[in-house]
Length: 394
Image 1: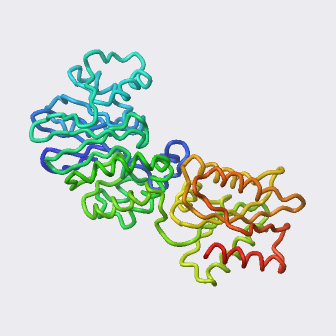
Image 2 (image 1 turned 90 degrees about the horizontal axis):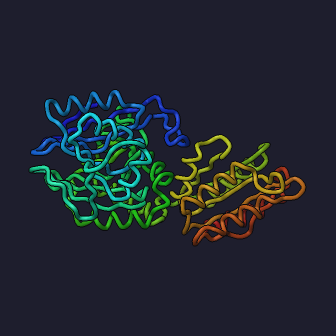
Image 3 (image 1 turned 90 degrees about the vertical axis):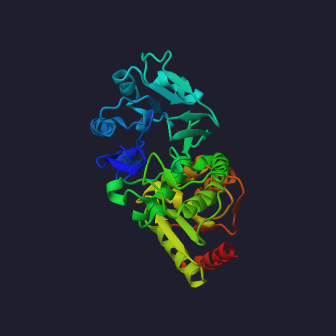
């Protein structure tokens, strides 16, 4: 896709609609966009490349955008292969190109492109350094661990553009979600799933970048995935601030359930009904055995209260729940309230394991009473569910 962004700037990215799993783990039913940009000024700069899956399309876009120009610079904001796979090809095709990147990225180049000669062909930049292109200039913003250690963002004052690397990205090909954020009816949905699963562990680092961004006159955010954002920028920044502070976004209760033969799911559904009857503003129930785990992680962070309901398994915890809680551990789940419902036919063990895993998470309060179901929900279990619902909504 070629799109003029005005003032000598061109979008040359590519949509990938054939990919089944992004990063080999996240389902992307609407595909993914690999974004790349060209600035044609006194100097010509290519901003990032593309995933090798879309190499032919990206190369054709680049040739069309350049015309008879030869690029002077290749700026690598992020070394992950879905953005830098064609960097070596650019250097081989145009021997005079200078690759611009962070010191950390320079160290990685040889790992991703063994045997490539980089002597005298790289320019390392750091926070505050400026690459002059003519009327355009790129001022670099260090963004370590958003979400790799070598990441840079850059700001072009000429058109108020923030090239935000993976920040402010989202799942979805541009042909599906629209080129601009204003074309996207629900940007936050897939941007939230993208954020918490890919960037979410690094909230303090995102906060540091947001503080730097607050000093800039940003009129356009140009990420490496997802639409170019030009309208309603305050809302995108507001959401990123909430997400990166690990604050709940929506009042309600998320019930995550892992049931083997349906007994635990029936109990979770009954608890959901009780919560709604007691006035819960929103209750979302997910069957972990049949749903997108990345979406479950997203919902856990979205709401202030969570119920984990699971069967016991092999003297421990049914594996879908173990996987879910493990993901929350590594993504930095915190500052929430959690309630436990366990099921066990002879030796209930799920509650113990869930309590242990929740106990490793910062500022997560486990509510009492935990509820134990024996195989199937019985009338005598209902008072305990009622009491747990009261504790959740307190």
